[in-house]
Image (tube, rainbow over all chains, first blue to last red; front, side):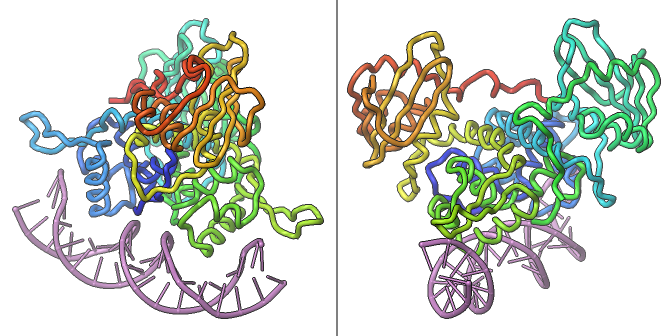
Length: 222
Length: 222
DNA sequence: CTGTATCCTCTAAGATACTG
DNA sequence: CAGTATCTTAGAGGATACAG
């Protein structure tokens, strides 16, 4: 991408990460940590291999991504975010938070990745009752599993199963994700096929951080 | 831009604002408020008129920009951000904050706009001593004037002159901007041609928000 | 003055085949 | 698996002409 040629930090930032696919590559590296070319490709459905290759070179050239040889047993290259690259996390959070308002509409042709079940709660929700004892929610969607742990004012999430969850949510990924991030309500989620077993009251504990800056999530784009 | 086709709020956000020039158009509308086609063009050196026109139509189509007829005397169209468009401010702030690390290098061919003298302090600095009495800094750069008012924990800025400033900073825009945002130190700014008259201690009051703990790598998923 | 429309050129992006 | 090479197409950039 050619430079905007402006002495403005926004323009300069976009000079580096404004290219198509670039911020999504950073997203993948943030979510996965160090990973291989193929892992990145798997997380970015639709990207051409030459483009991914070119972007990685560019990102390496400007010091946002590093490449390192994997430890002995596996002979491959691992791509990883540098300190400057990791510092883009607030940018992606802000973008993702803004984008939540666009998530209420479903499009049949869209891809969904199970990993997003885990990052969405950590990035876009907060513990509404920091003083209360920890709570655990098990998510089950399309054969994929994730666990949300709420406690001490923090929300953590990981892929996998919990031993003794307070609540089990099962259903289509979009219903679960929409419910957790506050894009859709429990009624709609239920109509989308969501079922819950256990203490539904822990849902109130999980406060979407979406509608905080300029009030209303507002009408969806049409 | 074609859609990424992912049910992910970051991807969906980029579907709408990931095009070249789009976020800079939003930046201009945020900084200027409602303005005319020509004003936007002036703030976006290098953009082709047909491209600006096309982007504005796209932004209007997805509900981020509205167009309204100016009040009677002037017969023109004013472009303005909708509520959803205004909500992009945190995204631009995050990008701009991240981009500050790129501002230390000068490039001779780059454009600088005097308006940025005003928004940079409000977006990228904070009042380090909220309890202290208000302070006023007058900025003079290349014939352009801006005023920074610090007080009550807030930093405000506007184009123009102050009656009785505590400090007057004069010099090249980049020296002033770099100093205020913490990209360069006072020594370097002085060597770049900055002069200061008055109470230099109020500079300590203006704390750059750049190197704050929020940008520290907060538990990247591994 | 405020845009819109139409050229043209050139780079970026997408699709796919193929190699170390 | 990890890319490179090649081809095609879409979109950006720039110049200018033109309409309200």
